[in-house]
Length: 129
Image (cartoon, rainbow, N blue to C red; front, side, top):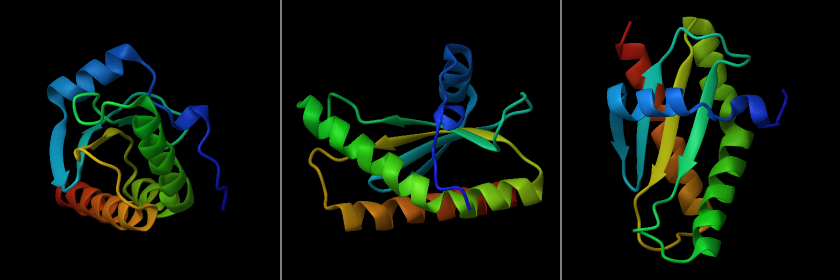
């Protein structure tokens, strides 16, 4: 299994991001909100993701950057479950991970919460069939 999370996994298109936040579905897995949208557009991988930590929640940039860095690392190590499910269902999605707490939480706790959010996302995609 390839454990990289390169540029092809990053959601960079402004049009896709706007469409995701205007038309996408919201899934709450406290302290993470997941916005996701199924897409038919041509992509190299089965998903593209964007990470967000609002400045309103965390005032210091180094705190926001640390949380996003942790998000990327956790997703990089655990992307196989999501990717395998999407390939099996023959679907492609764009999604955003939005952090909703005012302070940083330990990496282990953040990992548990993010894995729970990914599990909820997978079950939500299953229900759409």
